Length: 423
Image 1: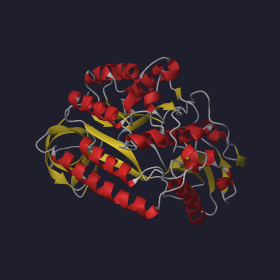
Image 2: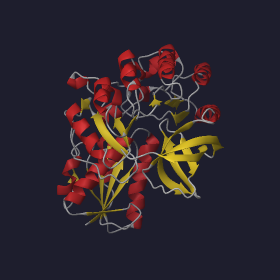
Image 3: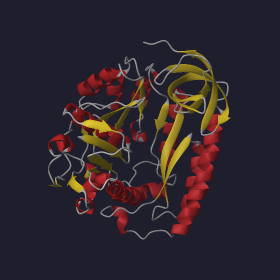
Protein backbone atom coordinates (compact mmCIF):
# COMPACT_ATOMS: atom_id res chain seq x y z
CA UNK A 1 0.00 0.00 0.00
CA UNK A 2 0.99 3.63 -0.47
CA UNK A 3 1.58 5.33 2.90
CA UNK A 4 2.21 9.03 3.55
CA UNK A 5 3.64 10.46 6.76
CA UNK A 6 2.55 13.83 8.18
CA UNK A 7 4.32 15.17 11.24
CA UNK A 8 3.49 18.10 13.49
CA UNK A 9 5.52 19.32 16.44
CA UNK A 10 8.99 18.55 17.71
CA UNK A 11 12.09 16.76 16.43
CA UNK A 12 11.16 13.71 18.52
CA UNK A 13 7.97 13.38 16.49
CA UNK A 14 9.96 13.71 13.28
CA UNK A 15 12.41 11.00 14.34
CA UNK A 16 9.62 8.63 15.39
CA UNK A 17 7.78 9.22 12.11
CA UNK A 18 10.95 8.38 10.17
CA UNK A 19 11.27 5.13 12.14
CA UNK A 20 7.62 4.25 11.45
CA UNK A 21 8.20 4.94 7.75
CA UNK A 22 11.24 2.67 7.67
CA UNK A 23 9.34 -0.12 9.45
CA UNK A 24 6.58 0.14 6.85
CA UNK A 25 9.09 0.06 3.98
CA UNK A 26 10.63 -3.09 5.42
CA UNK A 27 7.12 -4.59 5.58
CA UNK A 28 6.74 -4.03 1.83
CA UNK A 29 4.79 -0.76 1.73
CA UNK A 30 5.62 2.29 -0.39
CA UNK A 31 6.25 5.60 1.37
CA UNK A 32 5.06 8.55 -0.72
CA UNK A 33 5.31 12.31 -0.14
CA UNK A 34 2.58 13.74 2.07
CA UNK A 35 1.18 15.85 -0.78
CA UNK A 36 0.55 12.81 -2.97
CA UNK A 37 -2.49 10.48 -2.95
CA UNK A 38 -2.03 7.56 -0.57
CA UNK A 39 -4.01 4.62 0.75
CA UNK A 40 -3.06 5.42 4.35
CA UNK A 41 -1.99 8.64 6.04
CA UNK A 42 -0.16 8.48 9.35
CA UNK A 43 -0.42 11.70 11.33
CA UNK A 44 1.95 12.33 14.24
CA UNK A 45 0.26 14.96 16.41
CA UNK A 46 1.43 17.62 18.87
CA UNK A 47 -0.18 18.85 22.09
CA UNK A 48 2.33 21.37 23.43
CA UNK A 49 -0.22 24.17 22.94
CA UNK A 50 -3.95 24.43 22.22
CA UNK A 51 -3.04 25.74 18.78
CA UNK A 52 -0.88 22.68 18.05
CA UNK A 53 -3.71 20.37 19.04
CA UNK A 54 -6.18 22.35 16.92
CA UNK A 55 -3.83 22.06 13.92
CA UNK A 56 -3.74 18.30 14.47
CA UNK A 57 -7.54 18.13 14.21
CA UNK A 58 -7.53 20.43 11.19
CA UNK A 59 -5.04 18.16 9.43
CA UNK A 60 -7.41 15.20 9.81
CA UNK A 61 -10.25 17.25 8.29
CA UNK A 62 -8.01 18.39 5.42
CA UNK A 63 -6.87 14.84 4.63
CA UNK A 64 -10.45 13.55 4.69
CA UNK A 65 -11.61 16.21 2.22
CA UNK A 66 -8.69 15.72 -0.15
CA UNK A 67 -8.65 11.92 0.05
CA UNK A 68 -12.15 10.68 1.00
CA UNK A 69 -11.27 7.01 0.50
CA UNK A 70 -8.02 6.98 2.45
CA UNK A 71 -7.52 5.60 5.93
CA UNK A 72 -6.04 7.90 8.58
CA UNK A 73 -3.97 6.68 11.52
CA UNK A 74 -3.42 9.23 14.28
CA UNK A 75 -0.70 8.94 16.91
CA UNK A 76 1.36 11.18 19.20
CA UNK A 77 0.81 13.61 22.03
CA UNK A 78 -2.58 15.06 21.02
CA UNK A 79 -4.17 11.63 20.67
CA UNK A 80 -2.55 10.54 23.94
CA UNK A 81 -4.15 13.57 25.58
CA UNK A 82 -7.58 12.89 24.06
CA UNK A 83 -7.97 10.08 21.54
CA UNK A 84 -11.74 10.59 21.25
CA UNK A 85 -11.27 13.89 19.39
CA UNK A 86 -9.77 11.82 16.54
CA UNK A 87 -11.26 8.32 16.61
CA UNK A 88 -14.79 9.71 16.24
CA UNK A 89 -13.88 11.44 12.97
CA UNK A 90 -14.71 9.80 9.62
CA UNK A 91 -11.78 8.04 7.91
CA UNK A 92 -9.79 7.76 11.16
CA UNK A 93 -9.40 4.01 11.58
CA UNK A 94 -6.78 3.83 14.33
CA UNK A 95 -5.59 6.03 17.16
CA UNK A 96 -2.43 5.47 19.14
CA UNK A 97 -0.81 7.70 21.72
CA UNK A 98 2.88 8.21 22.41
CA UNK A 99 3.56 4.48 22.92
CA UNK A 100 3.10 1.40 20.76
CA UNK A 101 4.03 3.05 17.47
CA UNK A 102 6.01 -0.04 16.52
CA UNK A 103 2.64 -1.84 16.27
CA UNK A 104 1.56 0.24 13.26
CA UNK A 105 2.73 -2.14 10.47
CA UNK A 106 0.56 -4.87 12.04
CA UNK A 107 -2.50 -2.63 12.58
CA UNK A 108 -3.11 -1.30 9.06
CA UNK A 109 -6.19 -3.48 8.55
CA UNK A 110 -7.53 -2.90 12.06
CA UNK A 111 -9.90 -0.31 13.46
CA UNK A 112 -10.13 1.16 16.96
CA UNK A 113 -8.46 3.10 19.72
CA UNK A 114 -5.16 1.45 20.69
CA UNK A 115 -4.03 4.27 22.98
CA UNK A 116 -2.35 2.98 26.15
CA UNK A 117 -0.55 4.59 29.08
CA UNK A 118 2.88 6.09 28.29
CA UNK A 119 5.69 3.54 28.36
CA UNK A 120 7.76 3.04 31.51
CA UNK A 121 10.84 1.79 29.64
CA UNK A 122 12.53 3.21 26.55
CA UNK A 123 10.81 1.95 23.38
CA UNK A 124 13.02 1.38 20.36
CA UNK A 125 11.27 1.97 17.03
CA UNK A 126 14.14 0.66 14.93
CA UNK A 127 16.12 2.87 12.59
CA UNK A 128 14.87 6.00 10.81
CA UNK A 129 14.18 6.34 7.10
CA UNK A 130 16.70 9.10 6.45
CA UNK A 131 15.55 11.54 3.79
CA UNK A 132 17.04 14.84 4.93
CA UNK A 133 20.50 16.40 5.05
CA UNK A 134 20.86 16.10 8.81
CA UNK A 135 19.70 13.11 10.82
CA UNK A 136 17.76 13.18 14.09
CA UNK A 137 18.58 10.58 16.73
CA UNK A 138 16.17 10.30 19.63
CA UNK A 139 18.11 9.37 22.75
CA UNK A 140 15.56 10.00 25.49
CA UNK A 141 11.82 10.13 26.19
CA UNK A 142 9.60 11.50 28.97
CA UNK A 143 9.99 14.35 31.46
CA UNK A 144 9.85 14.62 35.24
CA UNK A 145 10.07 18.42 35.51
CA UNK A 146 6.31 19.10 35.71
CA UNK A 147 6.53 22.77 34.84
CA UNK A 148 3.23 24.30 35.86
CA UNK A 149 2.14 25.14 32.28
CA UNK A 150 3.24 21.93 30.54
CA UNK A 151 1.16 18.93 29.52
CA UNK A 152 4.06 16.89 28.13
CA UNK A 153 4.99 14.89 31.29
CA UNK A 154 1.41 13.63 31.40
CA UNK A 155 1.35 12.43 27.78
CA UNK A 156 4.98 11.28 27.47
CA UNK A 157 5.47 9.76 30.92
CA UNK A 158 8.56 9.57 33.15
CA UNK A 159 12.12 9.90 31.87
CA UNK A 160 13.71 6.91 30.17
CA UNK A 161 16.94 6.77 28.18
CA UNK A 162 18.22 4.85 25.19
CA UNK A 163 21.36 2.99 26.28
CA UNK A 164 24.73 4.57 25.56
CA UNK A 165 25.71 1.60 23.42
CA UNK A 166 22.55 1.84 21.29
CA UNK A 167 23.01 5.59 20.75
CA UNK A 168 26.64 5.14 19.69
CA UNK A 169 25.82 2.27 17.31
CA UNK A 170 22.97 4.24 15.69
CA UNK A 171 25.06 7.40 15.32
CA UNK A 172 28.02 5.57 13.78
CA UNK A 173 25.70 3.83 11.32
CA UNK A 174 24.14 7.15 10.32
CA UNK A 175 27.55 8.81 9.97
CA UNK A 176 27.94 6.94 6.66
CA UNK A 177 24.82 8.68 5.30
CA UNK A 178 24.90 12.20 6.74
CA UNK A 179 27.32 14.93 7.82
CA UNK A 180 25.32 16.09 10.85
CA UNK A 181 23.42 14.30 13.61
CA UNK A 182 21.03 16.11 15.94
CA UNK A 183 20.59 14.48 19.34
CA UNK A 184 17.03 14.98 20.51
CA UNK A 185 14.64 13.96 23.26
CA UNK A 186 11.62 15.18 25.18
CA UNK A 187 14.04 16.37 27.89
CA UNK A 188 17.49 15.85 26.39
CA UNK A 189 19.20 17.02 29.58
CA UNK A 190 17.69 14.10 31.49
CA UNK A 191 19.48 11.52 29.35
CA UNK A 192 21.26 8.95 31.50
CA UNK A 193 19.62 9.74 34.84
CA UNK A 194 17.98 6.32 34.85
CA UNK A 195 21.25 4.72 33.68
CA UNK A 196 23.52 6.40 36.26
CA UNK A 197 25.17 8.31 33.40
CA UNK A 198 25.26 11.93 32.21
CA UNK A 199 25.07 13.71 28.88
CA UNK A 200 28.81 14.35 29.25
CA UNK A 201 29.40 10.59 29.24
CA UNK A 202 27.47 10.24 26.00
CA UNK A 203 29.19 13.15 24.25
CA UNK A 204 32.58 11.71 25.20
CA UNK A 205 31.59 8.52 23.41
CA UNK A 206 30.59 10.46 20.28
CA UNK A 207 33.59 12.79 20.07
CA UNK A 208 35.36 10.62 17.47
CA UNK A 209 32.33 10.42 15.22
CA UNK A 210 33.16 11.61 11.66
CA UNK A 211 29.96 13.66 11.68
CA UNK A 212 28.92 16.95 13.25
CA UNK A 213 26.98 16.56 16.50
CA UNK A 214 24.27 19.07 17.39
CA UNK A 215 22.24 19.19 20.61
CA UNK A 216 18.59 20.03 20.04
CA UNK A 217 18.06 21.72 23.43
CA UNK A 218 19.31 21.74 27.01
CA UNK A 219 18.23 22.80 30.48
CA UNK A 220 20.73 25.21 31.98
CA UNK A 221 21.16 23.21 35.20
CA UNK A 222 23.18 20.43 33.52
CA UNK A 223 25.78 22.82 32.08
CA UNK A 224 28.65 22.31 34.53
CA UNK A 225 32.45 22.23 34.30
CA UNK A 226 32.48 18.56 33.33
CA UNK A 227 30.05 19.00 30.43
CA UNK A 228 31.80 22.13 29.15
CA UNK A 229 35.20 20.40 29.38
CA UNK A 230 33.93 17.47 27.33
CA UNK A 231 32.31 19.72 24.72
CA UNK A 232 35.48 21.84 24.38
CA UNK A 233 37.42 18.72 23.40
CA UNK A 234 34.91 17.63 20.75
CA UNK A 235 36.15 18.44 17.24
CA UNK A 236 32.70 17.65 15.86
CA UNK A 237 30.48 19.69 18.22
CA UNK A 238 28.11 22.26 16.73
CA UNK A 239 28.50 25.42 18.80
CA UNK A 240 24.79 26.12 19.05
CA UNK A 241 23.18 25.86 22.47
CA UNK A 242 19.42 26.08 22.82
CA UNK A 243 18.88 26.80 26.54
CA UNK A 244 15.22 26.89 27.53
CA UNK A 245 14.48 30.05 29.54
CA UNK A 246 10.66 30.58 29.40
CA UNK A 247 10.79 33.79 31.48
CA UNK A 248 13.37 36.39 32.46
CA UNK A 249 11.64 37.20 35.75
CA UNK A 250 12.43 35.26 38.94
CA UNK A 251 8.89 35.50 40.27
CA UNK A 252 7.44 34.12 37.07
CA UNK A 253 10.09 31.39 36.88
CA UNK A 254 9.14 30.28 40.39
CA UNK A 255 5.44 30.28 39.47
CA UNK A 256 6.31 28.17 36.42
CA UNK A 257 8.22 25.70 38.62
CA UNK A 258 11.34 26.22 36.51
CA UNK A 259 13.80 25.68 39.44
CA UNK A 260 16.48 28.23 38.59
CA UNK A 261 16.92 31.99 38.78
CA UNK A 262 17.64 34.41 35.98
CA UNK A 263 21.01 35.08 37.62
CA UNK A 264 21.90 31.37 37.45
CA UNK A 265 20.79 31.26 33.84
CA UNK A 266 22.93 34.28 32.93
CA UNK A 267 25.95 32.72 34.67
CA UNK A 268 25.50 29.59 32.53
CA UNK A 269 25.35 31.66 29.35
CA UNK A 270 28.57 33.41 30.39
CA UNK A 271 30.31 30.04 30.92
CA UNK A 272 29.29 28.85 27.47
CA UNK A 273 30.38 32.06 25.77
CA UNK A 274 33.72 31.97 27.56
CA UNK A 275 34.32 28.42 26.29
CA UNK A 276 32.80 29.04 22.82
CA UNK A 277 33.21 32.77 21.93
CA UNK A 278 31.30 32.60 18.62
CA UNK A 279 28.56 30.21 19.76
CA UNK A 280 24.86 30.89 19.24
CA UNK A 281 22.66 30.91 22.33
CA UNK A 282 18.97 30.51 21.49
CA UNK A 283 15.95 29.96 23.70
CA UNK A 284 12.20 29.50 24.19
CA UNK A 285 10.08 32.15 25.89
CA UNK A 286 6.47 31.99 27.08
CA UNK A 287 4.65 35.33 26.92
CA UNK A 288 1.64 36.07 29.11
CA UNK A 289 1.88 33.37 31.78
CA UNK A 290 -1.20 33.93 34.05
CA UNK A 291 0.76 35.47 36.95
CA UNK A 292 2.99 37.64 34.72
CA UNK A 293 2.37 41.33 35.54
CA UNK A 294 3.44 44.30 33.43
CA UNK A 295 6.38 44.73 35.81
CA UNK A 296 7.34 41.06 35.44
CA UNK A 297 7.28 41.33 31.66
CA UNK A 298 9.36 44.51 31.78
CA UNK A 299 11.95 42.62 33.83
CA UNK A 300 11.94 39.81 31.28
CA UNK A 301 12.47 42.30 28.45
CA UNK A 302 15.40 43.88 30.30
CA UNK A 303 17.10 40.58 31.10
CA UNK A 304 16.54 39.07 27.66
CA UNK A 305 18.15 42.13 26.06
CA UNK A 306 21.05 41.84 28.51
CA UNK A 307 21.62 38.20 27.50
CA UNK A 308 21.50 38.98 23.78
CA UNK A 309 20.14 35.81 22.23
CA UNK A 310 20.97 34.80 18.65
CA UNK A 311 17.31 33.85 18.22
CA UNK A 312 14.22 33.04 20.27
CA UNK A 313 11.08 30.94 19.84
CA UNK A 314 8.18 32.94 21.28
CA UNK A 315 4.98 31.32 22.52
CA UNK A 316 1.91 33.11 23.86
CA UNK A 317 0.85 31.19 26.97
CA UNK A 318 -1.56 28.37 26.11
CA UNK A 319 -3.77 26.85 28.82
CA UNK A 320 -3.48 23.06 29.00
CA UNK A 321 -6.21 21.30 31.01
CA UNK A 322 -4.79 19.17 33.82
CA UNK A 323 -1.76 21.35 34.50
CA UNK A 324 -1.30 23.48 37.62
CA UNK A 325 -1.48 26.72 35.62
CA UNK A 326 -4.80 25.75 34.01
CA UNK A 327 -6.56 26.71 37.25
CA UNK A 328 -5.32 30.32 37.02
CA UNK A 329 -7.20 33.16 35.30
CA UNK A 330 -5.87 34.09 31.87
CA UNK A 331 -4.39 37.48 31.03
CA UNK A 332 -6.35 39.60 28.56
CA UNK A 333 -5.47 38.49 25.02
CA UNK A 334 -4.79 42.04 23.83
CA UNK A 335 -2.26 42.53 26.62
CA UNK A 336 -0.53 39.29 25.61
CA UNK A 337 -0.58 40.33 21.95
CA UNK A 338 1.12 43.62 22.77
CA UNK A 339 3.79 41.86 24.83
CA UNK A 340 4.45 39.39 22.00
CA UNK A 341 4.90 42.30 19.60
CA UNK A 342 7.41 43.95 21.95
CA UNK A 343 9.38 40.75 22.42
CA UNK A 344 9.29 39.99 18.70
CA UNK A 345 10.83 43.39 17.95
CA UNK A 346 13.59 42.72 20.49
CA UNK A 347 14.17 39.22 19.10
CA UNK A 348 14.58 40.55 15.57
CA UNK A 349 16.98 43.24 16.81
CA UNK A 350 19.13 40.70 18.69
CA UNK A 351 19.14 38.24 15.79
CA UNK A 352 20.34 40.92 13.40
CA UNK A 353 23.08 41.92 15.84
CA UNK A 354 24.27 38.31 16.09
CA UNK A 355 24.22 37.87 12.32
CA UNK A 356 26.27 41.04 11.87
CA UNK A 357 28.94 39.54 14.14
CA UNK A 358 29.43 36.79 11.55
CA UNK A 359 30.76 39.27 8.98
CA UNK A 360 34.28 38.35 7.73
CA UNK A 361 34.24 34.98 9.53
CA UNK A 362 35.16 31.87 7.55
CA UNK A 363 33.30 28.77 8.64
CA UNK A 364 31.96 25.39 7.56
CA UNK A 365 28.50 25.22 6.01
CA UNK A 366 26.53 22.02 5.44
CA UNK A 367 24.77 22.49 2.09
CA UNK A 368 21.09 21.58 1.93
CA UNK A 369 19.43 23.05 -1.17
CA UNK A 370 19.61 25.65 -3.92
CA UNK A 371 17.44 28.77 -3.78
CA UNK A 372 17.47 31.37 -6.57
CA UNK A 373 20.91 30.28 -7.76
CA UNK A 374 22.50 30.27 -4.31
CA UNK A 375 23.36 27.24 -2.23
CA UNK A 376 21.79 27.34 1.23
CA UNK A 377 22.94 25.58 4.36
CA UNK A 378 23.71 25.99 8.04
CA UNK A 379 26.97 26.66 9.86
CA UNK A 380 27.87 24.90 13.10
CA UNK A 381 26.28 27.77 15.01
CA UNK A 382 23.12 27.20 12.94
CA UNK A 383 23.39 30.48 11.07
CA UNK A 384 21.60 30.09 7.76
CA UNK A 385 24.12 30.86 5.03
CA UNK A 386 23.50 31.64 1.35
CA UNK A 387 26.55 30.90 -0.81
CA UNK A 388 27.47 31.65 -4.40
CA UNK A 389 29.39 28.48 -5.28
CA UNK A 390 29.95 29.52 -8.89
CA UNK A 391 31.05 26.66 -11.12
CA UNK A 392 32.33 24.61 -8.22
CA UNK A 393 30.91 21.10 -8.25
CA UNK A 394 28.89 20.83 -5.02
CA UNK A 395 25.76 18.95 -3.97
CA UNK A 396 23.46 18.57 -0.94
CA UNK A 397 25.23 17.10 2.09
CA UNK A 398 28.59 18.61 1.07
CA UNK A 399 30.42 20.75 3.61
CA UNK A 400 32.12 23.86 2.23
CA UNK A 401 34.10 26.70 3.73
CA UNK A 402 32.45 30.09 3.20
CA UNK A 403 33.60 33.60 4.01
CA UNK A 404 30.68 35.63 5.38
CA UNK A 405 29.71 38.98 3.93
CA UNK A 406 26.51 40.85 4.77
CA UNK A 407 23.30 39.94 6.53
CA UNK A 408 21.00 38.48 3.89
CA UNK A 409 17.30 37.57 4.17
CA UNK A 410 16.97 35.33 7.27
CA UNK A 411 20.69 34.67 7.54
CA UNK A 412 23.95 35.78 5.94
CA UNK A 413 25.48 35.69 2.49
CA UNK A 414 28.88 34.11 1.99
CA UNK A 415 31.47 33.49 -0.69
CA UNK A 416 32.67 29.98 -1.51
CA UNK A 417 36.24 29.31 -0.33
CA UNK A 418 36.74 25.57 -0.75
CA UNK A 419 35.00 22.24 -0.45
CA UNK A 420 35.92 20.19 2.60
CA UNK A 421 37.47 16.82 1.87
CA UNK A 422 35.45 13.70 2.56
CA UNK A 423 36.40 11.79 5.72
